[in-house]
Amino acid sequence: MNCVGSAKVWNYVYNGNATVVPPLKMFSWLMRTWRRKRKRWRSFRKSSWLRMPRLQTAETAVASLRLEAEQEKREADVLQRKLITSDARLETLQLAITRLEQRVEQAKCDADDQACELERVRIKNERLRQEAQRLEHDAETQQHQLDAFLSGMKVVTEAHEKEMDTLRQELDVQRNESAAVTCAMKDTHEMEMNILRQEVEVQQRKADCYGLEMEALKATREKEIGVLEREMQHQQRQLVQYGSDLELTAEELEHVRSELQDAKSHLDSTKEDLELARSERDQEQILRMESDGVVEDMRRECRAPFVVPALVNAFAEMSKDSPGPFVCDKPRRTLKRGPSVKVKLEVQQVNLKTNIRSKSRLNFRRLM
Image 1 (tube, rainbow, N blue to C red):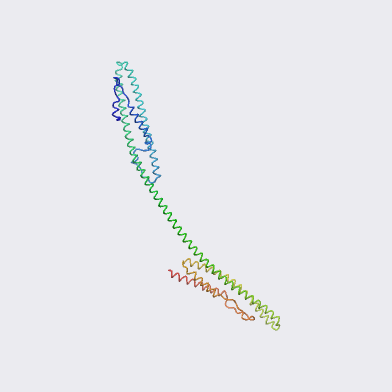
Image 2: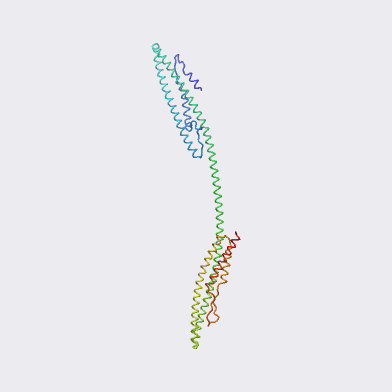
């Protein structure tokens, strides 16, 4: 239906009288169309596709779409208010036309007296008709604007959907990459932990070997101390035998007494030597622990397995060079003691340290 063409024929002659009919039919059709499309108009905004900012993330895109929807809702409300005001104006015009019709009907009774009034009413009716045509034209322009606005918002909505799809794809790619990186880091961590466990097991086995060697050395030292104690008991028994011999031989009493004094002094010196040997054994254990610490430091510095065989060889040499038990050749003579055990231990420790240092330097030079 052509609204502009149809509005031109609203003014017609009814029963031989000129009657003006307002274009309410066209306006009611416009109002029905606007009410049907009112919900879609609220979700768009005029010319928003021209000033659409570039979306950075999905959250900013949703926020911008919400702001644009609110702006479009406000613009639709403004258009609704304009249409309501136009409707009110048309209703007022219709009321005025009805009043004029009543006046015309009243003027029919007295046509002669109301000729000039009828002419004035016709002029006013023509003016109202022109006003109605102008309102129709405004409604058509608003309809065209709304159609253009809807088409533009459709294009903008499609562009927004495409950008949202690209953002979702990028987010999926980033999630896949992060999952792959976490899996790789987990595998490397497990590999490193397995290597560390193997190293700890190797070090534990080495420590067990060192403990067994130390137990063996401790057992040999205890055997040597037991031999010394047995010798001391044998000397005590010899002293008892000396006493019985002194009782039987009164003539050699003075000589035996002097020998007995010498034997007692020798026994005391033997006890002192035993105590000294025990203290030297303790010092030897302390020095062995220190040498173990030195060997461990050198092993950590050099990171090579040559220190452990060198340490075992040094302990073997030290056990070979340790002084043996004192032997009494003749029971009635004073024992001849060799060099001091402390001096021998000091010499062995110095030799051990020099051997370890020289071997470690040689191996370090080979590694370099």
